[in-house]
Image (cartoon, rainbow, N blue to C red; front, side):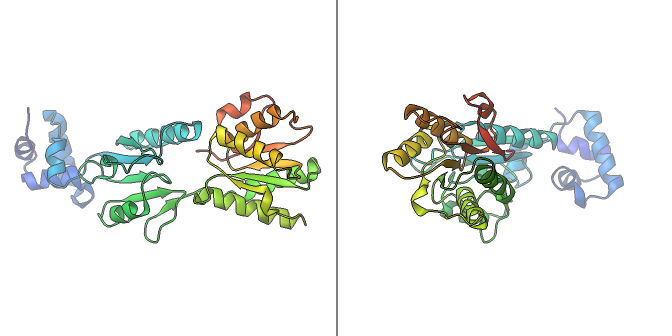
Length: 290
């Protein structure tokens, strides 16, 4: 097997230059980089990734930490991250962490020895763990979760919630619109419920506190929340949910209670996951491409 020394001799450079060309090509002069690249191709040299990790070099991998793999939205997001990483010549190391379980012991997708950078979804790791990762010096990007230092990728729900509320109020004549939200600590859900309240006020409608219910993002939780609304005797004539999975559960709960959708209670979801097209009736939803 050819070695770094073989590549260096063929390219007429030092082994240190070959190392820089592999780990930090931007700092190597273009003619030198071209000679090193040609030597690598001619010899069929394959970098020893383990050795590069020990030396603190690039791993060629990215990490993804997310709270479980269940659910269409997480699956779509994972597919998008993997496809983009592959297109950039990177491999992907994934860890699905149960937010309800014990603290994760295996955080390899966030360990600089294994990855060059990490993407973290909400609730995958605690705030303290995120702070430690921020101090490690490798790039970390958060999804739908803000931080004083780290960059965040999030979805602005303003336009979608506005269209949803106006559809319910203006097209269906709804005046008492309930909001089935996600966990109260989830920033994505908080943004959506804040827009629910703002858009109702913009139409001179009242965002009634008793019509805002928090649960999880699951179908089971959506069903429970819809049945809880009915059991409490709360007056409502439409439902907006913070996720499609919640909405699908709400459809089941309303059907169980003998309420027709949309004749008795129109329902709108959020995310536009593929199963939304296969519910009966098909779910009206806001597209938020994962």
